[in-house]
Image: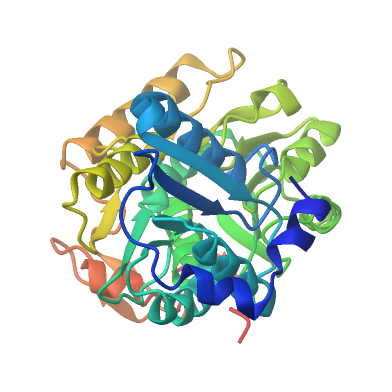
Length: 361
């Protein structure tokens, strides 16, 4: 479902007119659920986890739902055309799964008021548009703790996609956790301005390691940074999916996004006629963030400490952004005994102490 399907999806205005009345279940009794992915459905990371969530919902709901997807959709004008065509083709609910799909989703939703839309990782809503996200920063606190223990050079590297709050949260959460167990740690960041570009991701990881970094993290979607770490004999952490198979000697663990429960519930709400726009942001406790396979080469105490951090976050004993927290310039963000609110996290636009470099405009 790549070039040929994408060309069919970039349809005509006439098709749009046919879809303006899309509403409840179709004549065959099935609700149609569509998914839009920014990368390949088998990228090994973010888009693949959304597709696994789609398949899980399809299995859970059986013949009550028909699902489809379009992959490798660029953010921008192409996304708008793809979303519009999916709505015009009779979808009852459409999940747009990348931050850069936000404005296109809102625009198309106005044209199709009877279709339900859900946008992942964004913040704009409407009467027929809900938003959902996972607290990826919770997982970053776990792997940051591990990185702080595993580094021998006290230099950790981060391959980052786009400078949006979600990504900055992860960088800061990992840095705070690493420095909590190893105050000498610094975090270096390379921005690749792409969610999925294995070549750029690998080059960024190589550049970081050339600077003395010996542990690689990432908020990009391919296994390339992890594989680059493996080539140097260094530790790395998978992103979004369990990337153990791509670099079994390098992955310490990783963050695994789990969307299946959420997709099942939201499609079921359409089936039941109870769907309403919502704002969901779940982490470990909601089973939206998990940890990947742990390497059997990890020191036992590092693994035990990681599991303790996970459990403490899950049960509310610990918050990844609990004060005192200082910005990169030394000014205090939040004092001891306080934690950052969700609103403060959603607008995060600064680095914490220990991060090297500047955030691009």
